[in-house]
Length: 195
Image (cartoon, rainbow, N blue to C red; front, side, top):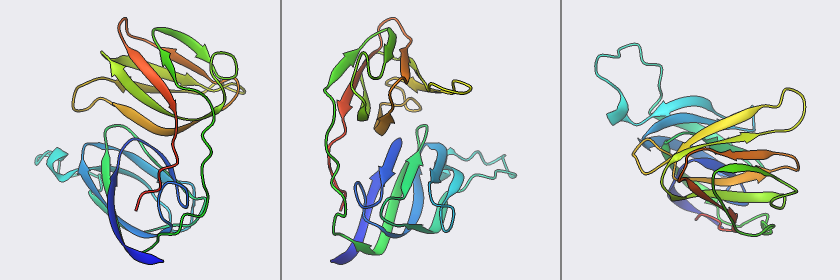
């Protein structure tokens, strides 16, 4: 079944065929700014985008995109949105048949200031990371060569992150919670196909 679709997505990683329909999309930055990139190299995306109202008139050399056309996502391709960017996805002919169903793994857990390790303190799986209270930063550290870490600022302000969808935690990854009163919830990502 194919149909015209239009929906918005914010910070997180989304998989075609699981979270969103596979198809060719036009993307428009509706608010905020941030990186957006996909796992597919051919007909994919790797752009810094920002909403038109974020672009300062005096910044004539701005390389930021407000729109991106002809992004093709096939079943299994992933698209990641970072920072406070909110994107509108539209397609004239999306495949509305869900190809893969995500099985919820893990249990909901509340995290406060401290360091938590996947596989010890919480189960491996795909989680939504949700702001519950206050503000501060979190850092997710991967185990292995170079111990790479991603940092995120959570809080109630416009530019702060309030939620990261579908974060795939691997065994040994550590999540550092900074901020005296910051409270974060890890909730197993639900199977919610966007139509």
